[in-house]
Length: 478
Ligand code: ADP
Ligand code: MG
Picture (cartoon, rainbow, N blue to C red):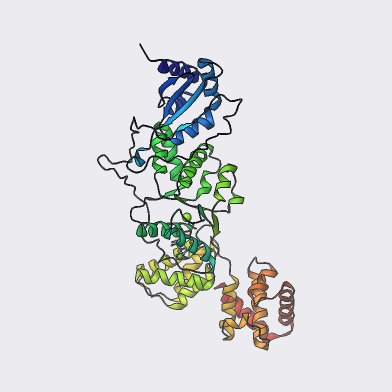
């Protein structure tokens, strides 16, 4: 004779099976085991807190109906949560569950207290645990060269960098949880989050750090659905101490994945585990995200990486060359930093192709070679003569120090150089008058407009001046 609770649960399952897709049934209901029936309270055992939350969120009504059907209008359901095997060696599984769920009201006979000291009756098969080893082994997927040592500090990255550093000293225990780093492509997000991970590993070798590209996460999730082992997937992520998700914008529009990530996020956050995320936009501009997930992103700190200024760009190139033990004339480095302004990855790409060219053709690395390469390299991508570069060419032409343009001085020759820089910036860049003014001695747009008029007037009246302008223009287009 079968036990009463088994019978009752069987009957419930029959109804449930007819009401949800087969795959969902297999995933969320087959693993459940009925434990006991006491009066009108049926206790069922679920494999994890996540499981419980999922049922609560997605199947509460269905469960309510079926339980009432079998046990009458006062029928209740209680859960017992199995400890995650990853936690079984340490403290009891500490679930933080509100004692009064908002749904467990007077009108809702389905009450869901959780047994906080569940007995561990069934091991969850977990492919990430190596048999015989209690401790999980997780490959962190971190790239050694993306370290803090190799990450050049500048105004553009100071906040994100120091927040990252603080986290690595104290993962999960700072206010920066999650830390969300955002910027356009090629500005160092991936590098910085690897640096954080590496430093955590260095400071706390016992902590489990995982770097994962969001695309990979999405694919793993899809795969787990296909193989019907979502639970293993979720448990795996819930075991991580420092979870680094790169390019989180890729979960946009993927509701199921966001759902799963939401629960993983909550679990980790509740247990003081650290989350580090990157995205290509600030949280407010991320489209296709569930509001509740977005609101979580705002719990910690969102810090951006900006386009590095010229000095930082030069330092980044020098750092890279030094690390690789390569020497290169300073003027070439400078030229590179002047020419490619908005994307560090592109700047490094140009550097690499110059090195390759010089090795392949056994040519010395000269400014000429660099110019040829950059032209090929940048023309069809982002080549826009920058304001910085224009200033440099103008100053070189008149033999003036670069700082002169940004100084307050009213010396005639410097005023003229400044006006020329403004004139060429208007001609060759898409920058606004205000931006040009800002970069040429912190002037306003009216000053820039005046400069352009002055240069145009002189072009018509002053032959020698016209020669200057033509020669500079030629140099700019080299
Ligand atoms: P993102 O993830 O924002 O697209 P990456 O982290 O991939 O950018 O950075 C692109 C390249 O620029 C990488 O090779 C990285 O090492 C380099 N880089 C970016 N910022 C810095 C920096 N501050 N110091 C040194 N290298 C940097
Ligand atoms: Mg990246």
